Image (cartoon, one colour):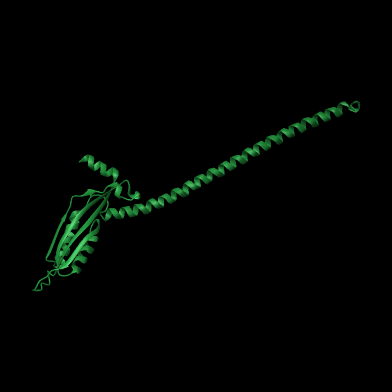
Length: 205
C-alpha cells in the first residue's frame, strides 16, 4: 500500500497534516481566547453590579443623611441641641404672665445634670442627654392661664415634659377673680449633645 505513495502524494499528505495541525492549534487557541474573554466579560458584569450597588447605596445613604440632617438642624434651631437657653424660658414666662394679668408666677430651675446612660434606650447611647428641672409656683384666675403658659413655653427654645402639676382652687369668702386658683408644676427640660462634645466640655472645665 505504502509502495503506491508517490513523492508528490507524500508531500501533499505532509502539507495537509501540517495544515490540520495548525488549524487544530489555532482552534484550541481561539477557544482559550474566547473562554478568557467570557470570563473577563463576566468579571466586568460583576464589577458593574458591585459598583451599581455601591452607587445605589450611596444615593440612599445621602438621602438618609439629608433627611436626618434636616431633622437635626430643626432640633438645633429649636434649642434642643447644645447649650440651654434659659433666658428665653424666663422671658416667655414673664411675657405670658404680664399679657394674661397673672398675679404671681414664681419660677426656679435646678442645676443641669446628665442622665445615666443605663436609663437611656439603646438607640440613644453615645449621646449625652441633660436634664434641668424647672418649678413653677403660680397664682391665677383660672386653669386656662396655666395652659396658656405651658403652650407659650413650647414655642420657646428647648424641649420639656410636664412631670408634675397640681392645681387647686383658693378657698376665700371674698371672691378674688384674679387670684382664684394656684398651681405648682415641675417641668423637665432636656438638651442633647454628643458624648465627645460632653467630654470635651468636662475636660475644659
